[in-house]
Image (cartoon, rainbow over all chains, first blue to last red; front, side):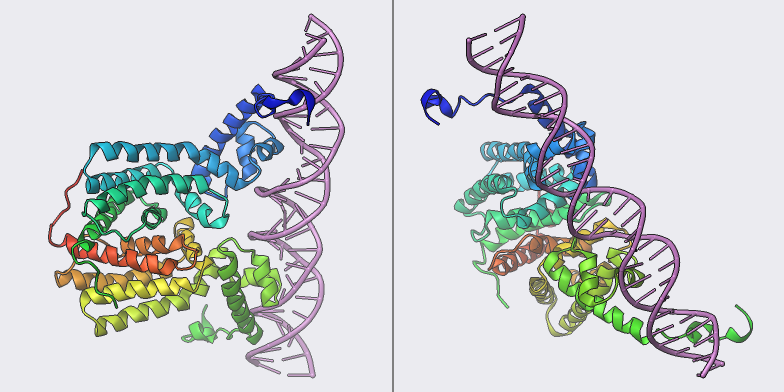
Length: 205
Length: 205
DNA sequence: TGCAAAACGGAGGCTGCCTCCGCATACTCT
DNA sequence: AGAGTATGCGGAGGCAGCCTCCGTTTTGCA
């Protein structure tokens, strides 16, 4: 606690062992594969087996199922966030929003079970996927606000709502050709956003 | 197969024992309660315990988790289908559609974990909830077609898509006040449906 | 009243979750 | 280079839930 640990105690901790890093990578790759097929309830022991490590090792690296999830998706989420940034520069407000949503559909398409996993994760444990939701919310929120500021869409729809709607649209589909349906739904929704700006508020009741 | 079973063989089978009927009711009530709290992965043994029957009895009545699910929801689904029928008589096409969707949100609001359960059930086993989906699809499809035939909404959105979108909108929400958000989302979507009818097809890309 | 069909219920085998701890290994310091 | 030790490994084991199977009990019909 005192003496030689001194000032650099924070960074002086030994850097992780190479085998630990290697195993961590193996686990992430295995988890991605297993969850993609088996969905959110896939066996963690199967993940460990596939990664070629013991179950104990899995739990040391990722103490909870949710922690593993979040780690797997962190990178993918980054990509989506970056895409939003790029679209902001490249496209007109509403069009950028529309394209981002469409890209999201394609992204989900490659994941199968993962969409459900992510969706269920959010409400399940309050801790889980805080990062992912936060990042995506910020990304889409930026696009939303820009379009709203430009007066092109109604301004009372929040980024969380939009994200949830999107996830919901994707979550059930498993039959071939579902992507076309969802893309159409996205267009309908975006049209609805634009429409709302004209009539101020839609007739209640 | 022949002789005295004769013509009324179909109805001549002994009618179910009273205890069997009673236990079945108990199981359905228990399942509704347990699933509402614990979500789709709640313990079936907990359901049996709550119903005051053995686990074997549960499995005899409902051979699979999905069968139990479907049975629980059959009645609730009926109510929604009936509502669609009533709205058809009472409201203008688009307004009927909007109200039905809004009622659905309120319905889901009282179920908590059940929404996720239903959503996950559909893709999980091909057999499951066939009835429910079919019934609701028919109900909302009727409203959709009526509005489309009246030329008030675009015609290329199917009832399944609409249902999935709706479920998706509801699925994540757990915080207080979420209903208001979802009701707004529903309005946005309906606006989008109406808007689409004017511009024929939205600009792709 | 008697008896067979129908239903009951829980023991038991299986799998997955997660913890715990003795053993192996890779850094660090001399 | 060598030794010492923190760090990581991995699986055994306890627990809970899933589902099956079968001996026992109950009920309805004759």
